[in-house]
Length: 274
Image 1 (cartoon, rainbow, N blue to C red):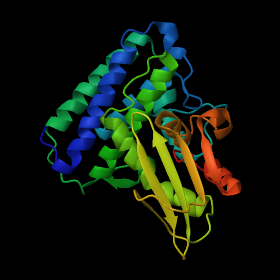
Image 2 (image 1 turned 90 degrees about the vertical axis):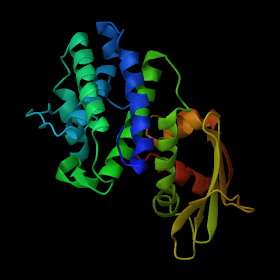
Image 3 (image 1 turned 135 degrees about the vertical axis):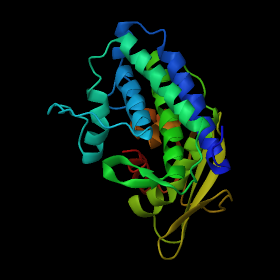
Image 4 (image 1 turned 60 degrees about the vertical axis):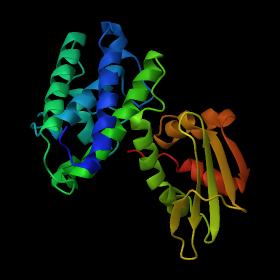
């Protein structure tokens, strides 16, 4: 690959996850494509359609001209409508059509990566007509692909890759928004600290500190007197942060110490994906 060094980690993580997705769905029979996944409202087919659609957009392909049905309960925002377009247009595609299109788009994207010479700060297309840097685009594709790989693994009962390269990109993406979750969304009081103790394949201890002005930061230094300590395993952390499960459903996998009201507010605002 010829991508800029700051993009290489994301390119490698993306490649690992999309190749795993292709391997997971290649042998599926028609009925298995309709299995529900933890991603609200989406089947196995829908997730693969989403992956295909976003990779087509990375390639610069035009978006499909398509009218969405009015009865899609999980589509509640303009962003969701934008994402649903690439999904719904493929809802009646057969298994061979899905695997063939996925294979073709991944070949095209791999060729694009091999020839990538743009700088990380190059502005590229983003959802809803916005722009984002190439580095953000690469990071978000690595994050999105790994999370959806895990959705498929749950639906197909094929666990794995919880510590693959995409898992570490996902960890960093989720940690980056943790100060906002604690300080702004959950309203943690100034001069408090909240500790997150995560075990399993991706293990970490992080402290979110809220300063006197109410701004949050995150670091790896333990706090001697945190207002709240939340302990869980990596898989549960991801499922909560990506909105795949509600806190009440995984109470047996969560250990909470300290201010119960603040802990409840944090968990109520923990899902950060659209």
